[in-house]
Image 1: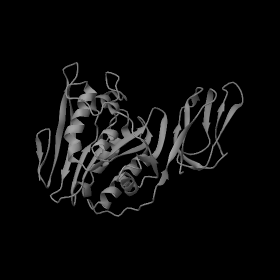
Image 2 (image 1 turned 30 degrees about the vertical axis):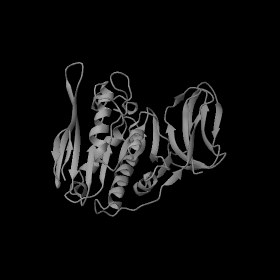
Image 3 (image 1 turned 180 degrees about the vertical axis):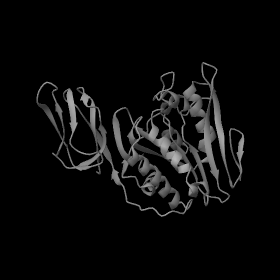
Image 4 (image 1 turned 135 degrees about the horizontal axis):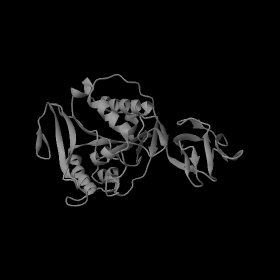
Length: 313
């Protein structure tokens, strides 16, 4: 059965790059969002991979690029892959997180047909792409100077979410609630589970995160018999709750532990030093857990988020 995106037909057994829509900027420049579709001739699951929701999140763009260029993916055994390597083309051009009007695209869902630029893009994703898929993976990175260890975020209680996350098998699987206006939340309202992969930091390639993202997608596709490929599956650590440790004083921040490490209660995680003197504050682990994310900013101010820790229970 053929599928249609923006009135463009993709027949069974064919691959095609189509345009989601065209958006006009104030310069009268038209911006188009390419969508890659690999539509097998054999019925099966329909999977979405999308990246570049924020223009500075380059790791996800590279993950999707690598996947759609693999021979086994180009020749799916069954099902359909819809891949959008750069969802937010405008912000990607500027290397920025936000759209030109200052809005975050991932707070614009479900969007409106005649609204702002972000709202129009969100509307097209919800109405053109979501009806075609069974599930998807949305790729993100940490913000400026925040490095996230490779992780899948989902709502454990949402039917099918945790099963997909376990098949993806990222090193960390985190129970993460929905936020209003996000793509993941809007998809959940339509019973379409979207996993969020987080890895690395913005505007910097993190090859551990990229490799984990690629391998996770391939494991997921293999488990659904979309491709034939042998990949080891190491169960991820399931994180039920998490917290940020914040700076209690300003100064120079030194981290003692590596991202992703298991840490024990009362273990020294890092120190904040006075640039004109000695160590001012030592940061200890509040309880046993795993390092989920780290702030790589060397100069920190009181109240800054420094260390993200996840706990299994």
